[in-house]
Image (cartoon, rainbow, N blue to C red; front, side):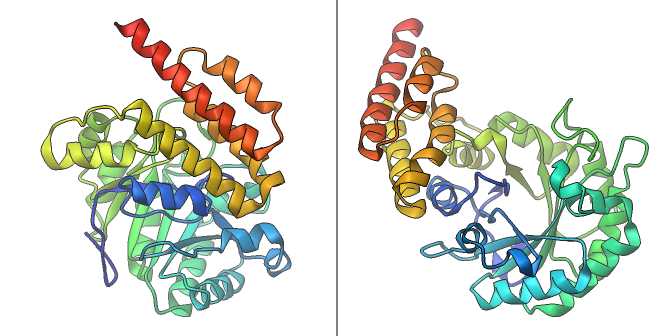
Length: 329
C-alpha cells in the first residue's frame, strides 16, 4: 500500500500510545517488523510546545523513513500550525488524533470527542491538509457512542479533504477500552472510500489480524496494547500474513536482548533517573504473562539504579522463561 508518495513495506503498524510509543519503543518496533511507527500524540497548543515532554515526543533522531508524527487538538488553525512546525522538524507524515478516549483529552474537545462535531472535523482536516505538503492521515473511533456510530460519515469527510489514509479503532469513544472491538463498521467504511484503511482494536494474534483483513477489506492492521511487552508481534503477524504460517516463538536469549536493549535505550533517552522510572512499566509488560512475573515486577519497582535495574531484569526474564519451559515440559 501507499500513503502519499511512500510505499509502505508491510501491513502491520504500531498504534500511537501516549506514554508508550516514545522513540526507543518506535525504533524497537520498526526493528522487529512494524511497517510504520507513529509518535505519541503531540499537543497542538503552542503553550505546551517547548516543554521537555513535548520536545522528547518530537525527537525522531535515527528513525527510518517515513517518520510519522501524530498531532492532537481542537482548533483548526492551531492544528495547521502544529503540522507545519512538525514537518519543518522532520515529520514526513502527519497523523491527526481523533481517536483518543482519555478524559483529559476529551474534556478539551480533542481526540475522540471531536467525532460528535462533524463540521469541526471537516474544518480541522481541511486546515491541516492545506497547511503541509506531506501526506496527512487520520485515526478515529467508530463514533461518539453506540447510538451514533458515524465513522462512515467521518471517513467520507476525510477522503474529500485529501486525507491519505484512515485508521479506525473498533470501539466508540464512550467504550474507551471496555468490551470487545467490533469491525463491522470498518467493513462499512471500506465500501465508501478508496484511500488505504487500517484496522485497530483487540488484535493480539496473527490469526486475528488475518481475519480482520479478510472480513473488513482493510489494507493493514495497527497494534497497540498487544505490542506492550511483545514488540516482536509485528514480525510474527507480518510473517503469517505473507506465508500463512506462524513463526517459532522467540528464544529466551532473543527476548532478553530485546528487553535489555529497550531498557538501556530508555535510560539514555530520558536520563537515568526518569529512564529507570519509565522502564518499570515496560518490564512489567515483558514479565506479565510469565511464571513468577509479578513477583519479579514487584522486586524491580524498588530499584532506582539503572545498572541494577538491567542486572535484575536480565535475571528475571531468564528465570521466568526457564520456569515456563519447565512447566510446559
